[in-house]
Image (cartoon, rainbow, N blue to C red; front, side, top):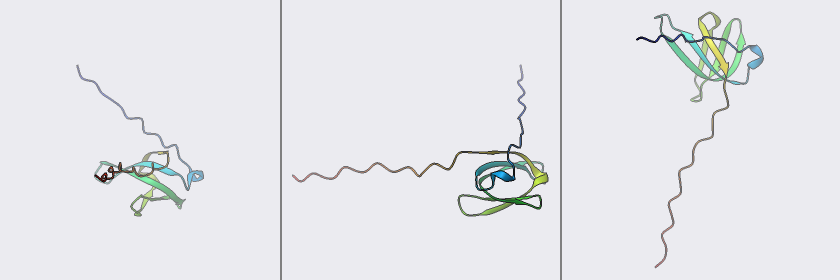
Length: 89
């Protein structure tokens, strides 16, 4: 028995989401898909500009965007547990 799964590809962002953190899936010329996660900095002339957390600005033409949504802000970095201080003895 073989199960087939169909992905639901929905674009649920608009120009009103500039400044929000988004997840975007785009179709590459090879036919493969690639995800971009970051802050939507602009959406003009049918090109989205997304700033990744490493500072890279990725420009995505509207016509290759196949899915996108607003996602929660990036969580703060986890703190490492502190080592106990040695006791004087």
